[in-house]
Length: 154
Image (tube, rainbow, N blue to C red; front, top):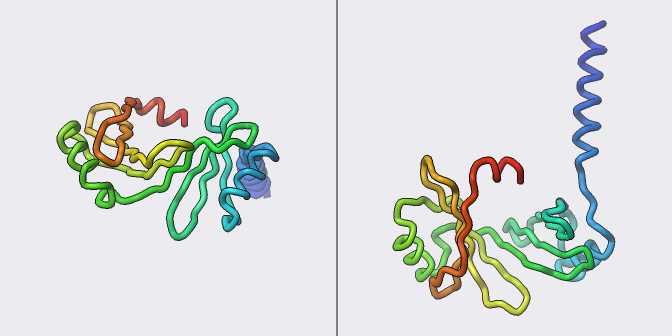
């Protein structure tokens, strides 16, 4: 009986902690999200940075994430794609500039007033992960290094 009580307390503590971590975006953000993605019924919200909210969701069989500021202004949308679906110019640029790295993830990135861009997460054993953003013509727009510690904090 003692062990049953301990197990029940542990289970209750686990579930209450899990529920406490669920974040809810401000009403203006949720409203803007519904207006931009009216067919989406379910999204997981997380405060990405101070004053920015990210929704992760599925639409049309694809995984997406959308970022809005606290006022509900749309910041960006990322749509996950396969590395093979990257434009040929981007694939060539990755091969030329990051030949020792492997593509772990790829995404199309839409932002207000900008042309479509492609984000590529690159990994090399023993090295920091690189996140690189390319234009459709293969031009490197920016790159960032991420250490494993940074990934653990996200």
